[in-house]
Image (cartoon, rainbow, N blue to C red; front, side, top):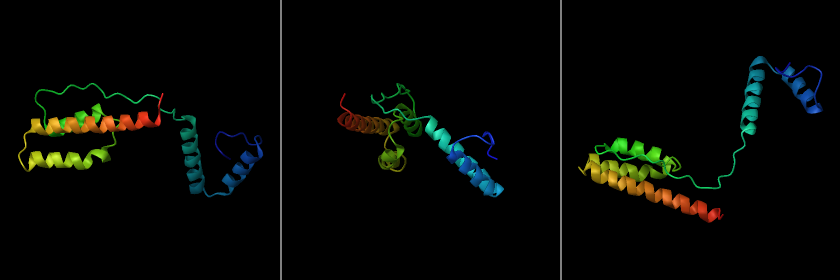
Length: 132
């Protein structure tokens, strides 16, 4: 019997589901139950369409900051930007710092400009698709 369902009530679909459940081996019963829980959880929280593009978090740049910490700060500042979009440029800037000796301050300035540019592109695309 399916946990949580009364034994003799329900629609024809529920009765069919109970019958199929009883015919499964215990491992498949557990899989079916996990899948049902997944479906129930995903359908109970419908995603509301975004009407306003999110603003960046206000995280101040410290006076002394490493490039790695700056990347973490900027990722937290702009959580709406997918990391994959930034990987190539971020890697190039990190290489310029570590291998070619570009100062951390200069690299961080470029990182900030890059993150802001990507943010503004995403925001412009959003506003173009969602004119309010």
